Length: 104
Image (tube, rainbow, N blue to C red; front, side, top):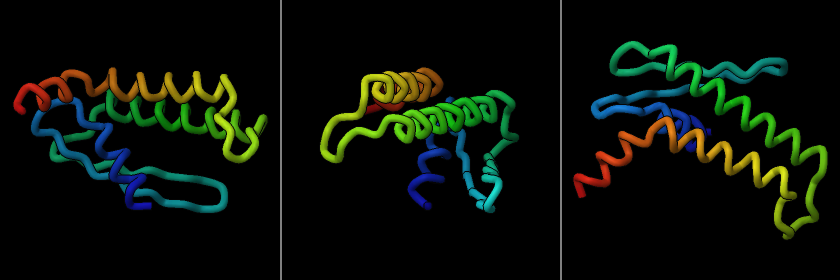
């Protein structure tokens, strides 16, 4: 579970000097994410996480609806959804990522 919440915290960062922590609470009927930051957590970040979570659920449902045989690539729709998810993550953090790369 730690890699998941660490990854969710990492994709919240949009600007330099931002830091986030994410924890998760699981119950049989609900999953709750708790987000804390070194400053207040903006509606923008919360909306981003909600959008990401919705995309992950959509991918999960797509895989369950039409599973690929083990060892074969995912179906085309699953790949489209996964690429869209990656694009959302990159677009949200693009300026921060560019600045980090320019420092190197």
